[in-house]
Length: 244
Image (cartoon, rainbow, N blue to C red; front, side):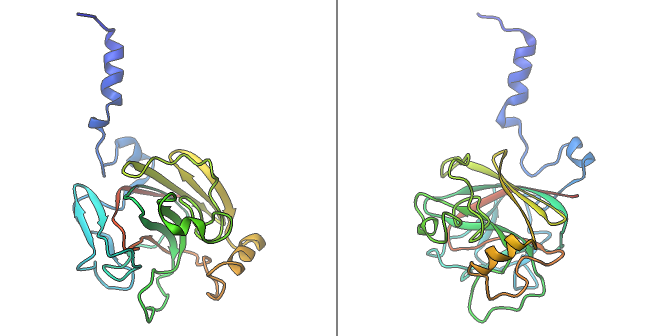
């Protein structure tokens, strides 16, 4: 039998995905100030975007994941969006997500808790890290110059075309950093772009977007984190945040 050095065997063991624990923080992460926003077992810390409690339908907690139940791709007509109970301003957020074919969803931040309940079902307003199957959902071809594709600041700033996307059915990791007015979008360890909230450039982007009629869009000092129900099955896990 071929023999391998002990240190190589240790490297294999350490790197083994099977040993990774979802929805758990390491001692180092805890020391660095990270907190779990989702424990993988309950809906603790979350509620419906326009409800006082967690939706009674439309979402599942199973196998350590938040799962959006499909409803023919219709936005917020089933369970609706879910949001954190707590508000955040300066933060770093990490979220693992997995798409199904043709799926649409999003991770929103600076979701204003004071926004009125809409007359008709729709997503709560907030800055959005777009989560989308670019190859099979028509939204990828709408908007301006690709600003509705995966990783984009939805309808405002397009993610680069050469972004590192894992295929449908595999996990991707979104990372959002917000410090003062500076915001960054990352995907699978690669920075996609940055922008300044409230800058002249930002205000012009909003003025040219679907949000132009919403006064002060994206400018609240603190807001909730949101996972979107856009009527397609999407999976979320490992939702970590640390305040900056």
